[in-house]
Length: 251
Image 1 (spheres, rainbow, N blue to C red):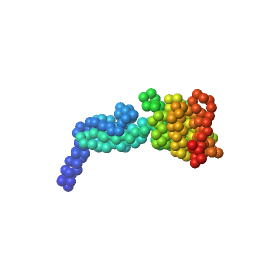
Image 2: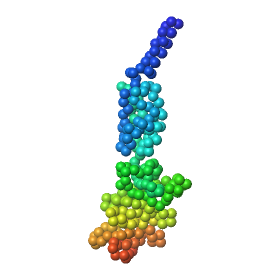
Image 3: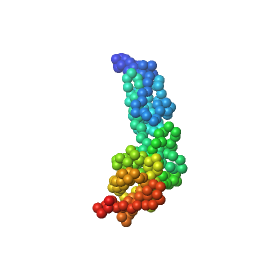
Image 4: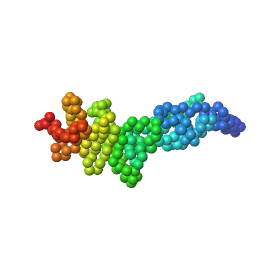
């Protein structure tokens, strides 16, 4: 009994030393994965601070609090020795802007995650075509549309068009489908509805032919539903239009 009492007393003393002594106080909180979010802002959100006990610190609560920072997608905190916390942050990647009565950032999963601010890196395509009320009342529908806009942007990049004609706007319309504006001169490309990749292949062929002739286009229309292979070109400065078929019988 005396031995058991002694062990219990020493165990209690050891536990008190571990949980209240200076040896186990958190000396450092280290962050990895930060690019857009700031360490100071995350530390301000966290209920766990430097100087708290490493063993009793509520790291789960700290993870939840830091994850409320708009730029942060996921947070993972690990205890380390000497007493420190290692915070691994996975940030959201802004893929586009959306006009919702103000500019907001959209991530790769088509989620609107924060209002755009100076310094956020606003050299992104702008998605237009619906209002803030649409987003509030039909959020799932709008996110699906945003996902479609991001697919268009991805197809545009895959086709290699972004190098000479970076996208500036992707306009979505419930009837007319997709219209994009690209390049410094704001080339209008009406894609309409349906598959994007074949239309972009026709667009590249038309633009290459125009360049070979030393010409440019103000707009290229690829939304002819009756004749999907037809391309209508409005040359720059001419006011006229040319229609070409790029299917088996066209050129």
